[in-house]
Image (cartoon, rainbow, N blue to C red; front, side):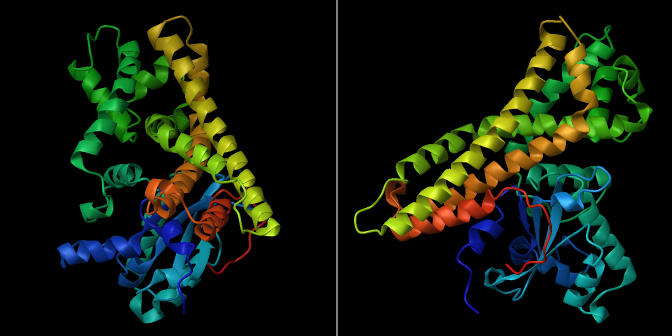
Length: 374
């Protein structure tokens, strides 16, 4: 079976919407044949996990707009030949796993452990290595560090950025503390980071009048929003470069038919419009967050906006994760497919391929779900 030319960039590990367990497992085992693999069931380490928009018809009971798809490759030695996908929330997911692995290769204990891992990842909006590593640490799940591809330097940079955002919150709850180095303040910062000790976080819950039953989810979501605001800053340059590249590559090319030109121009317009829409959503969230944060902690003029933002943070977390994830996925695919050409001057045929791929990545949310073969 021939490779699908669109699948490689879409399934690569560099996108925050994709966790290519297959490729990463090969790397892990090459370095350490005894490594602790991602899934207990050996066959499941050939999967790819993909974040994708949940069709509107499936969003029952306030379910998040982003779900986790399991991609079962037809050929685990070459996953780009195609495969089948199913959302984790669909009723037939366990049956699909058993069919893929074979009944004899599964034990109830291993299946339960593996379903727990997928369930945990289903509760984050994107599959950024930092978020995955963080949630695995919080949940006490141990796998080989190489699955997360986060260098110590990158982890320290992100952690430092986020802890700076936590400090004013702690000092507001403990006015007697001079800085985050104060023992009580430091302990509470650590508890916010973990987001699982309700009793320890009670001073903050009371100070900011948060609903106790949702407090841990709120702190976990706020931490995620802070991370995405960091990522938003890092991604701005590539986003601008992509928009500029699209504008420069929409023009007709000598020798290309009018029909082909019209198709590419329509696709690029769709991509550009969707990119801007998702970026504007992200920008609005980041600016609203920063404005409310500054009013409360920098200007000390009003707490109302920040507290309202905090109470709605679990919903906002999914919105920004979905929008920024789409943009990052598109910029990654574009970068992979265009960077091999000098100055990104892409021949017409390859330009067509990029336009079609980006249109697929930035496709508007679907109304209904259908099983698909990639």
